[in-house]
Image 1: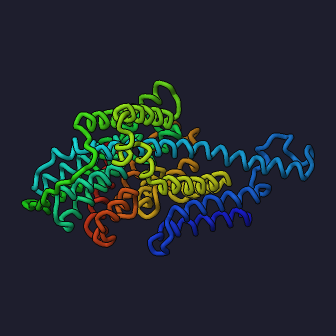
Image 2: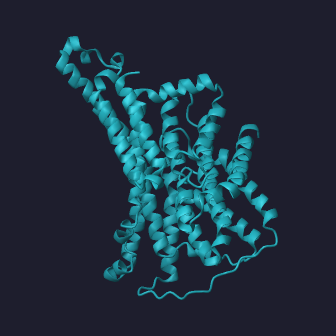
Amino acid sequence: MSFALIAITLVFVVGYLAIVTEHNIHVDKTASAIMTGVLCWTIYILASGSLVDLSTLPAWFTQQHLGKEASEIAITWVGHHQLLEFLGEISSILFFLLGAMTIVELVDAYGGFAIITDRINSTNTVKLLWTIGLIAFFMSAALDNLTTTIVMISLIRKLIAEQKDRLFFAGIIVIAANAGGAWSPIGDVTTTMLWIGGQITTLNIMHSLIIPSLICLLVPLAFLSFTLRGKHVTTPEAEEAENSFVVSTAQRNLIFCVGMGGLLFVPIFKTLTHLPPFMGMLLSLSVLWVISELMHKHQRDEVIDAGLHIVTVLKKIDSASVLFFLGILLAVAALQATGLLASLAAGLDAAVGNIDLIIFLIGLLSAIVDNVPLVAAAMGMYEMSVYPTDHAMWEFLAYAAGTGGSCLIIGSAAGVAAMGMERINFFWYMKVMTPLALMGYIAGALFYQFA
């Protein structure tokens, strides 16, 4: 292995450790991810003469045709071209996420999710667990697991007074949101990556994974139904909120229907037009934007002051998460450009041999390491010429990466959000929820493999 490859590998490993231990070193993972991505590509470009496979280049790139200096410039140009090519693929994911996050934020600003949450009034712990879990499961498929977790934890705060009682619900929400996102092309960023990359198609992934994903949730719910049987939760006292700007029920419902309809329209748009999914998402966002503008065309200042204008909503978008995805995907792309991922795939195949076992282990690893770079790495490791669109390997990867992260509270974006919102102790989750999540993960995986 050349010095440049060793340097890129070390930068990636150190950067990854910084991401995993962000709370210990007090450096946000976004900063570590961006630095890792930039440094990996910097090393690659500077050492492109020793890393680019000259046998793959046209004859006119070689030194005897161009001369040494011109040949080096040409090889560097190839590195730049690779970077821009990868950046195009990454940008399609980022614009998709930006559009989806903006739509969800606007719906939430209008109180649209109250259409669902206001209908829940049970105090029986088991019944409430099943209700919350199933709602989170299907909501995550239509939105995404991170957004669903935030919405549902905000809901249980209105339903359950005691924080210690909310812990079980927060744990189930994490498991349900991750399981629900795995079988939908827009429910989890990793499934979205596979969908945008052409490894899976909409109807096939939904048909193949909805039952295994549901089993992944039902097993923990069934266990808690016995251990928490007969218990009830206490509800908090109602609080009257005074708003300077009142949104009518009709306006709230219109924004909710257009927003949710726009998200569900994206797969249809892709199927009909064959354009990238982010184009459909941006179209849905633009339609919702126009409707919200026309709805309050004579109240612009009041809408802005109330935080309901879409320009105001855009400021609430979690830009740090988007930049994190940019940084980590750039870093993984650098590993792919060097050929390290292909070598890793060959090594795994030689050491383990069974592709299903490899994917199963990747799912468990995603509980420790973020699933985004794991899936990005797998997409670079395995060629579509060997595993074509809708191959069982890609389907199982979507399930494993989407649900395996539930085994630890830090294993998914949904878990990290829940940990912060409800101050969930890492070791409490590992003691109480990890066995349940692991049982569900294994049960769903076995069903997919043998059913």
